Length: 398
Image 1 (cartoon, helix red, strand yellow):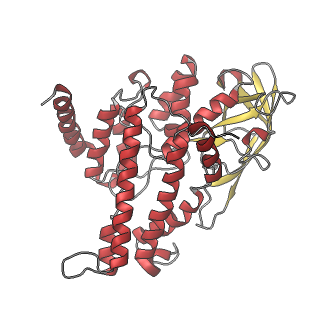
Image 2 (cartoon, rainbow, N blue to C red):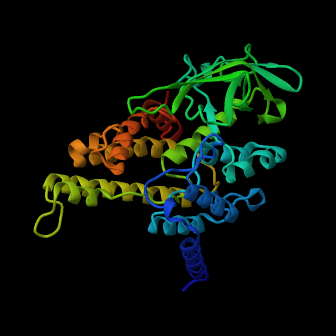
Image 3 (tube, rainbow, N blue to C red):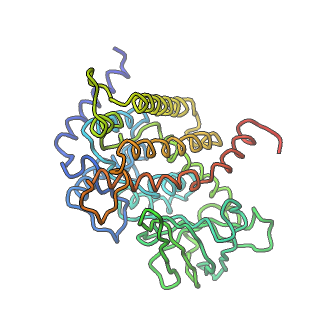
């Protein structure tokens, strides 16, 4: 046995023992996820799970130890998430702090900015939201018009953002704002951080067909963003903003280090056997559904292995244009999986929260099915991803 394999096995045994002692039952299976918001009360076991993982650095296992991360290699993080998956443990912490602004700060932030913000992200003390899209600047993001006026030690922000995920419960926002309105469209844009808890920021949730309101309109009326929270150079925020989008697409596409806690809940095969029955051999009774479940499982496995290979081949450790490939296919895979689950459940896959005849898993399946309708739009629409792939990956002419 090689030294690396032996070391991984030792770490696996250590993690397995730690999880056995430290993962509360209330943090296993479907349920609440911590996103860091100071405005959301966590269930007791979810809070305990977050605190224990943060203490070990397991909320951000591959991030540097000096900021509170675990300092693990991607291979070790993969082992950790595999062991979490085996016991049905939910991710101890999720949200934009973990998947978007945290990695961006580690790459572009000053040491003071990292020390100020990254430990709070790792400990789950702050929820972040994204101030990018505007009513007239969605896919054409560089057309944004929210102004930031220099006021000495801070900027005054005026304008509007839309589709601001989680703004109603977020503590902080990272935003692209126009600091030089005379510059060409992709220039004169800066990347700033600002507190959501100030008089100049107001939020209006947008109700969706799922019944939830994760997206919001956000209005700035002389909102303050301090200059020490300017990330990167003044008027050069487009570079930082694009990198953050690559981190976002890496997360949506399953590329974040090639390791993820396994999804909790029943497998498609188990659901099909429960709702559709089994034949004499114990297989799914409906032959067509059986074939579709097999195809879906093969596609998911192929996608996961391809993402793992891409991470192993990525020597720079930072995402590139190829993330658009994984975002494009990963979004479609999420939609197809949610649609198949809903079909398997039949009428039970169309549950409404007000009807007590539906189980928690059935209600979750309905919410998932409705929510995934947006996966081919947010984080850059399918059309945007296809353009990036054709230009930046395949090198096709404009």
